[in-house]
Image 1 (cartoon, rainbow, N blue to C red):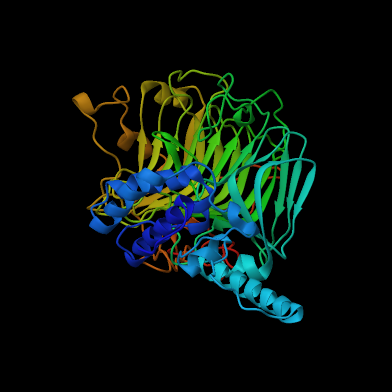
Image 2 (tube, rainbow, N blue to C red; image 1 turned 135 degrees about the vertical axis):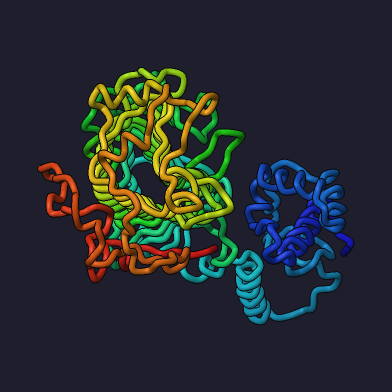
Length: 546
């Protein structure tokens, strides 16, 4: 280890060595270290040092113990205005903006000195970019955003926008994001649109807006950042509701009200990737979180890919969803509670093998199953697709805690567990109340033998007051007929959700309601029209592994 002239410089040097050791671990489950964030974010730095102290790798553990004794609060880059770091590694010095000490600087003319200074600055920028793994920020134009946004803010597509910490679109503000813009989230970051604020993020099929991790392609993973949160004033069944994933008591996380027509904004032709970190136990952000958003909110042509928690979670309100793709969620693909009453048409879900729990997990309200308004979304043209996982028990749908809902023209296939599990007698009662119904279901390839669509619940396993799912759904579902996907074995990186023209999904659909929102011509089961040459997911979606 090099000798350094100050404790701060020694700390930076040791952090750099720790990063280099982590980087050498490759794909052995060790996290990628964002060095600039490590220098500037004390919480991120402390978390990493605490993990290093208990690492099974002796080199990492030794560095962690040493760092624990010299770590300090605050950022470590205050030396950008000429302070020297002494004999520290020159690459590290340039990365954090220090100058390397020199005992006897050579004499040179003013002109020569200016040229040399410019050359050193250019070299410093290049080295900093290389060692921070972010050439794009240095040369392609990038802007870091943090804290509160007020007034009208426009994020143009000629820059990459970097989220640092939780970025709040404050009440009265509007964030406009141009088509084709890329937004990258650093560890611990999220974009939160508070109620009484709005977002206009309208991409196109040829120029989608991409929200992704700030890590390099190949180093990205679920939970790299926190995702997008949109909050509004539409009705929810919980007083003083506050969104998960934020510090308790921060009023900017509150949502819900009396305006069913509330408008949280527009999110259209957008991809959200590698989001959804855990703030603390049982408190997570999702890929996309919608809290109390009303009917004027537009969420269309949105893909959520590889979220660490849920793909999309809806807390109350009556926001509608259309042309939605959720791939590889690590918990549930679509989760709702607190009285959501919106509409959904054209929803494609792919649950990856060994990853995630449910296609749908639906609640009314935990602790008060009878709370009003009751969760009662209406869904048409949905495909819930599993990958025949033998590593994890995955259900297509778990309906519980008094939720309602109307589920129509659905294809359900490839899940290792049950197709549909209705839990709690209060949930079963929604059927008799007319708040839950099913029609036009096609269910196939469920459980290990491909046939056990519903679990038998006897004795202690009876969680729904003796309700017999198998008997009930025999009236509303076609069981066992293959949907005839064009790609029999689905891929994570190159899926094909289309079904053959001869698919039984073309028959026995129930009529789609009339109205401006609904496509009444979608007279088939599932998210894709049987026999279609191209699908609505083409062009603007992507399926990166990391």
